[in-house]
Image 1 (cartoon, protein in one colour):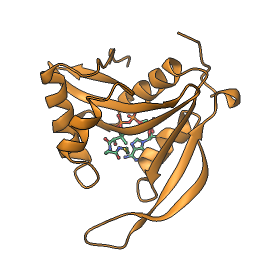
Image 2: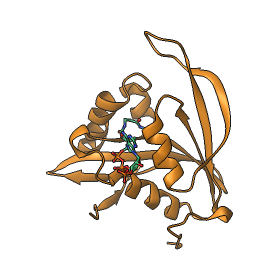
Image 3: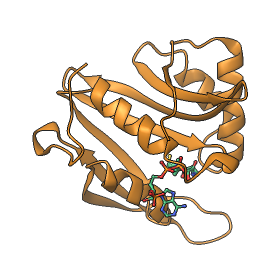
Image 4: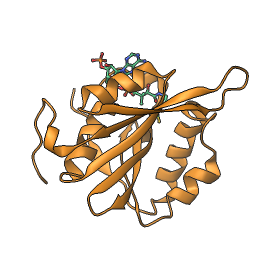
Length: 162
Ligand SMILES: CC(C)(COP(=O)(O)OP(=O)(O)OC[C@H]1O[C@@H](n2cnc3c(N)ncnc32)[C@H](O)[C@@H]1OP(=O)(O)O)[C@@H](O)C(=O)NCCC(=O)NCCS
């Protein structure tokens, strides 16, 4: 299925920011606070895309430009009832097309194989690990897997510039 992907305006309208905050609470509460999200949504270096269904935000991706040729994915989330329908993949592919020519970095927790598989599927390659980076309460700390998408490697699905 093809989901309609919308570009996030920075800062976003209040209902979109509120929808994203709901998804952060549902999916990323251990790692992100609402305050972190709201701060990032105000920064001019931030960018993102989102998808709506039944008039609510059901998925988003958020990143920031690091340099002319570098960008970073900060977070992505899909509402539980909408997962495994290809929405995150579509948001990620849109992000890569919008950032054509840039190297795109991200880090993902080693205990999140679903997200890691999604990133690998879209052409990201693991290049290092940051030991015991994420706090888990309760439980031992978890490594961060560092991944990057380098445009010259090209994903199998092919990139077209905007
Ligand atoms: C990770 C996440 C964003 C994926 O969203 P999604 O819209 O369900 O992802 P998609 O449907 O586009 O999945 C694309 C591919 O990713 C992989 N994948 C996604 N979720 C997976 C899971 N739970 N287990 C295994 N593989 C998974 C699969 O390869 C999948 O392709 P397939 O369904 O054809 O097998 C969503 O599970 C989520 O919000 N998780 C909690 C927050 C999080 O971990 N965010 C990422 C770190 S910031």
